[in-house]
Length: 186
Image 1 (cartoon, one colour):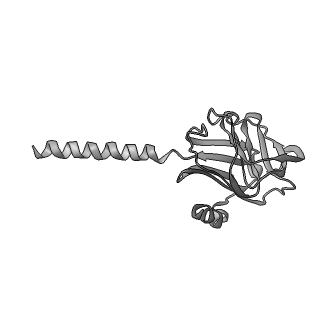
Image 2 (image 1 turned 180 degrees about the vertical axis):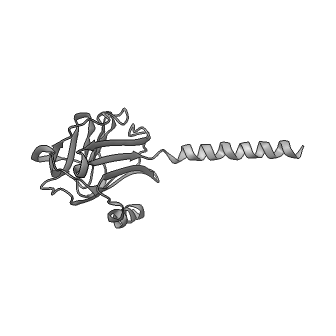
Image 3 (image 1 turned 30 degrees about the vertical axis):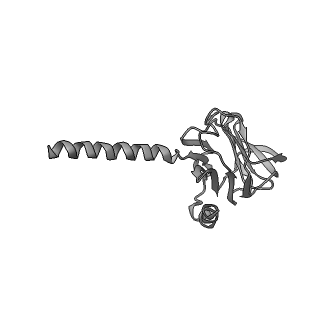
């Protein structure tokens, strides 16, 4: 819970005009946090749909925020990634803030209903007792771009690798150093 509070407290500090959603392990949970703003000039779409937060990595669908909410869907003119993993839908156990995200498989940008271009966005979703691997997410950065010149903008999803990969790498590095030291002493 402390991670969520810190993320929401500092969310406006890293809002620089693009939307960034970071998905990472948080203890035995997965936490998705996002912030930024979107320039919707030149985008078309429709209003007053209903969406629920969730992740479907096989469709590059990542919506974060509180529960079911009224949203506006914008058509992205240029495609981005159509998948960010291989597993179907998963829904968070809790969340907060605005509902926003991307449905990359269909090139849709999802924003809160009545969103005004440039307004600040902030939200999070928590998936309890699961991992990035369980959600079928592939580590990496996934970006959807739209517009040009002064109207250029983007949404990036950053899937942070599991800490166990770092631990294994650190273990191998430590083992390598120990073997080298042992050989030097002989």
